Image (cartoon, rainbow over all chains, first blue to last red; front, side, top):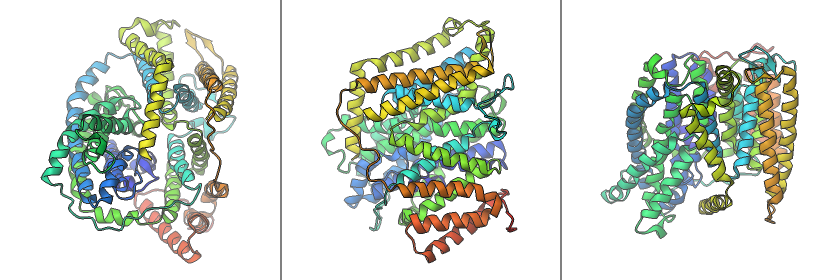
Length: 477
Length: 149
């Protein structure tokens, strides 16, 4: 199902995982997280198929794959591109699971030293880092962070029991649901963008053959795969980092160290292997801050965070202690999932190609229905469908005015925890804000956040960031 | 994006002011014992601060490029999609899952997907039934409505 979501443009892992959350109610917590995580890294495999075959990225992590993958397909090497993408994803996925297995326990140990001030400072750093890495000016991203924090504060104050910003409605006492907000902004917002005009869809009509890479392909790609795996994993850990940063970085590095950088963009296999490996490795790396610190690194992890909370599991350093079955079950499923995805994806290429031939005019109403149903089944309340529709419009307008949705969703999820951590810190310090700088870990985190804000305010840095964004956007065209 | 950023940041600034002032009714408390209004008050101030910074940044932006955001857009398609979704939300519990889903799919396929009535009806029936079976097999409670199904 994850591969199918990755293949279909428009649905995305955020909306899809949101739809599956109500279905996961009937499962054990371990099975639920395995299913949802499986869908996430499955989309990393599927997204490359549309990028390579029809020049449309299936999901954001496959944007860069379009550059060389589609060119390879035009030269009759679609099979090699798909094959190396699948094998690279498998190798990177395996490396990232191994790294997750070895890094998570010591990080959890370290995170046990965290108290409310440290958690608050870490979340501040995470949100500022996300804003720093977002496209456009940091102040716009931080506006979205503030908006997300506000949306998260709607409903009952869990400490004093006061209802806030409910305007007398009973439905808002529970707050605005994460699933309708996420599905609205990402799923419905995407559909509305596609509805602006008739979408011209390229249909891949050639036969795909030679899915197994040749020895030459392996020699050209293995370095890129290994580099992409480590780049992707460590960048995936960063809040806001995720697959987009990992894939762009991998592509830039491969181009820089290549003996023939001028050939990138014309169908170079390393230009597919590196980013696709980074993509999958980032998916594994993103679990580190979620499971060890309880901080979701990107919107997908934010949804998984919500899913874990629904199942009574508080993400953070205590997951390994109190729910080791969840952590080790997830790690095991990622090993097995990677093998299954490799074995399934290549033989099923013909099926994905057939699905890609379905006109968007037939697909989008079905996606609309699935989103609406997903929103409804959370609490069997039509009001959530209405909320999703409203946030669909919000998401569409945000895209038009170039406001990033990721900071909003992440802040929305983190907001209630941040508030608790902040208020507890003030109770601990008897009202003194100095507690955030008196404790060493918190001081370091606050210093890093301040440094990022200072960096983003420098005119020279802003100019360089704009140049890089413009260059990458031009390359995408 | 200059003009757009000026307008949107002004809107968010007003929203931030609203949030800050509205949260006063919940009580701010003191730093040593913050009340329910303390956190949203701070958020309102931060929203004002960042939207103010965006406004100033856009104001000082000397670039003369104008981005056409609302150019060649078929607005009726956007309105149709949104209204159909809202109508679905209101009809779902009233007329039941099967009927409301069929109607949602039928009209979107016909008017936005530009399919024939026959094809739209066939796909709508097929997708509705398959989704019904799929969600029912996972013990999901779907509304029956006054029609009984």
